Length: 298
Length: 298
Image (cartoon, rainbow over the protein chains, first blue to last red):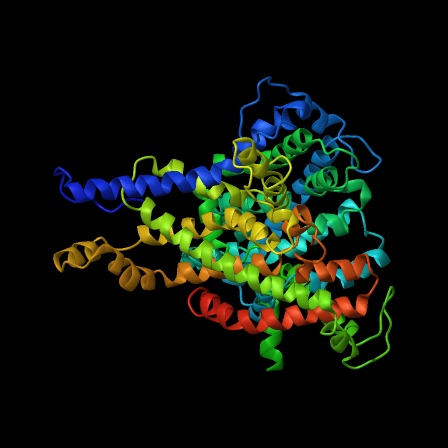
């Protein structure tokens, strides 16, 4: 990706029209930026208010008395239906789902990509085409039969079930990502190793994997955000014991009876967003690279 | 062929074995489940799958179900405005950022961060901001604008625009990021040449630069379209399809019929309709995007 911006034209004083042009550019960007930041701001100020203050109906005002009660409640004792265990349960579940799903899906994606771009396997490209096409199709087409199969094999509603589901639905993007990256590597490396008598796994481990760091970072970023943010698959496949944070968040906010605790809801919403936000802020341009190179996102 | 094929397989045996997981996923998890779903749509399955054959009955019922027709209509409205606004806003943001603005990376970060968060979060935040009792409406009335109305989330005629607002907030940064990446790859010579010819900048963007960004535009439209067809989380979190059925969408219609209304035949008929629609739209795009350029000739 080219980094440098358009070269600035000559450094001469701007004329009247150009000054207004600059002002217009900043005004537009500033207004839109405010629109984008508004929800984050509202979410944060609401989460630090007490319910008494929220009832005043001043959604944009700063909290008069900062309180972290809502945060504590959201984390430790917010209720989903009858259980009042707080979001930490969902957080733990999301971590338990995330780690194996990310590791397995990336490893499989790397092996698939490597086999597809360096080895001759009859029918592999047809399989890959089907896989890609599958990633465009709404989950609703696959879900019901998968539920039946899972139920029969006994993994329905288990950690293994939801991990397998994430591996299945992450496979198209991961395979595409690694295949395209490996296709850009010089094939001479591979040929030389073959002549030296190295086999499939030997080449993979000692030549291909050490060169995979950049694409592996992109893959981790994509999978962590995608799996953490997933709602539908967790809802269907994870089972009551392993519901991920997004599902628990929605239950906390939308199934409460009586007066809604908006401050707790917003604290819970921020908590659920922390992991993907941290990944986003820390990864910077890598995040964009992920979007651009894996044009099929689950 | 026989002996030669055997030799080929022997030389590449490990590669064949390494691709077995992918083959299994494609054959069972994608193609098999898809076929099963389509098969069920021709049966009279209710709570449990049945293996009878009732022809197109489920499809006739489906297109006689007002909830489904409402869902389709809603999806069309959402898709139209979402794609239009995201695209125009995303392009404008990218072009404005590309004018050597100060604080460029800050603007980029602000415009893309919603995309890193989950749809559940997006739905919940906007549900709160648009809350008629305590959100923007209450705040504006508190300032003295007693007739101020912003009741989108509870008004059946406006609720779709609330969903569009939340999804545009979530998705326009994606277009911005992809188009901006494209703009950075454009040769600076074009600007020099058009400036000499005295062509106004907006014309250059419209008739020269945007056509050059075709791949980026297609990628972003494909990504946005997929997210619209799959749209489920944001609606569940924000409105749960309501008020009434005013914000029902097809993906939610299918989920409800599969898991709550115990109408598997109808649900699979609906998912088959989605499947066919997506295939018809996506097949040419996938072909032109992935199979003509990338990929080493094996």
